[in-house]
Structure formats: C-alpha cells, structure tokens
Length: 386
Image (cartoon, rainbow, N blue to C red; front, side, top):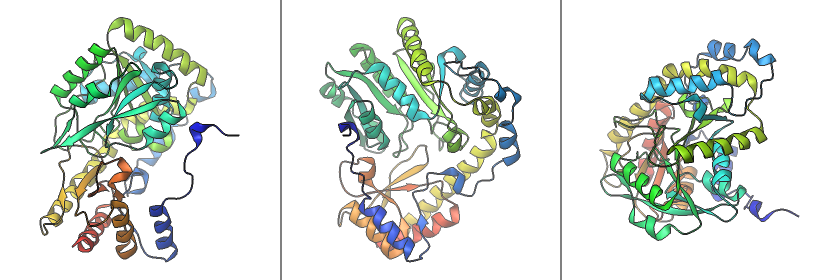
C-alpha cells in the first residue's frame, strides 16, 4: 500500500529506549545533545517578538511566489550588515524551513535516481530528504588531520553521469569546520568542470569561534544555492523561516530562478504574519546571538579545562557551529558506550554513528546547553570514561 521511499525503520532505537527507561526511573538527565535553543535558558525579547506578529499587513493575502519583497529586502539587509555581501532580493526565495529549501533544490536539479555528493560525517536529515525526493546520496569524506579537510580526490571517484550537484555544510554539522578559501576555489572548479550545482547550508555561519569566514551567498563561479534561516540566526526554530539564495553565471542563474519560482508558486508562499515579522525577527538576532556565543565559549572552555585533567579523551578542532566532537577510547561500539553512559551517569550524548562517522570512538556534544548543566554532564562523562 505504501511507497518504498517511506519504508524506514519506524521503531525506537536502542538509545531512545534507554532514555525512556532513565526518565521513567526519575533520574535527572544531563542533556549534552541540546539542539533546541528555546530551551537552554536564553533571554528572548518576548514583547518585540510577539509584537512583530501583529502587522496589519497580515490581513491581506498577497501570494508572491518568492515571498514578500519587504521580507526579502530584510534578508538582503542581513547579508549586507552581517557579512558585507550585496544580495539582490530578486535572487532570494523564502521557504518554511531549510528542509523545504532543500526539497526545492533537489526537485530543480534531479530526476528520480539522480545523485548528489554529500559530506560524511554530516547531519542525518539529508537521508530522509533525499528519500522523499527520490534522490541518491553519494558521500564524500571529510578527513581529520590537525583540522578537517574535504577529500577532493574522492570527488573524481564519486562523480558519474547521474551526479547533479555537491552539498556543502558551512560550517559542517557536527564537525564545526568551515570550507577554507582554497577549498572554495576547488569546489567551484570541480562544479564548473562537471556542470554541477553547489548547494551550501550556512545555518550556523554566524557562530564562528574566532575563524574568519565568508558566506557563499553571491558566489558566481558556479551555479550556487545558499540556504539559511531564522532557526539558527535568531534562534527561532518555531518560526519556520528560511530562504534559498541563487547565484552563479548569469544564464544558469536566470534559468534556475525562473524554475524555482514556479516550484515555490506551486507550494504557495509562507504565512503572511511571519513574512511581515521577518525584519523585526532578524533585527533581534544580535541580542540572541550574543547569549548563544557566550554559551558556546563558556562550554568550550569548560570542556577543555576538564579534558586537561585527564588523558583518555581528546577534543577535535572546532571552528564554529553548536557542536564539539570528542574522540574517546574504543572499548565497545559508540552506541553501547553512550547507552551505558546514560544508564550509569544520566548523561545523554550522541554517538558518532548518528552523524555517519566511518569508525567507532567518537561522541558528539552540544555546546549550547546551559553552562551549569554542561559542566556537570562533562564531569560525569569523563568520570565514566576513566
């Protein structure tokens, strides 16, 4: 009765089952996987956020396929102010989340069975999005050697006549690594040589931990689609505001935009109150980002302080984003290790395989957790690992 594309394993995994057992037992759980910024103790400007949703313009239905021009101008203003990049509002298409943005891009580029190159390790959501769009994902490795690098030799082995594009996460989730300038040029050269598009996920771009970074918005060397949104920029995932910026050689860019506009028009534009609120919600990002960066810096410093007192675990270099990767002793599978840690110390972390790490010995920690909870969780985790 049901399609093969939805034939996922729908039962709870072992880690989820263990989490439910610990919760039922009543123990306090130290959650080092936090990804929801609305629940890590931030002080949101509630009045300004709620007032932004009360625009009189919300009473009028103005179905612009790309999104309201005023909202797109606000997004362009964000890039000018935050990243010093001039973006034409006509090159921006608003979407209800980056997942919808990915679906637009996948539909634009791929016929059923076509392929996209995606980083490994990376966020597992790609697999579900690709399944729903009948797209095949082909991984390209990120290698770690005094920092993360893209394994460009693997590209030539991976590309086929069905390859339609390369997905880049900048900075990567969870490695926290940005694409370096040389890698940017190599990506552009590779995509141009093979007539491929470049899809760049920049949702964590504003959370650099000291590294100077540059957005791909406005990248004109290859047909490029840059995705971001309020989920991370203003720490407002519940508002479901995102966008796709199209750039590249003029002929490719013009045709891509025309086709994307039809796709967006078919799905209809996002709700009016949110569109009218975008200028205000983007304007509140400074206040919110300051708090999140404080969490990131405090938690990273605390992690390093506690790691310096032992020798069994090592933190890998992180340049930005909300996560840190910990290399741990391989005494059993990462899944077994995280389940035992949860049951014995009530500390929840993600095993490396959750992000498709190719071998055992990795834990993924969220750096946006409340600092007090993070510090105690790390203490318990390192005690357990010793």
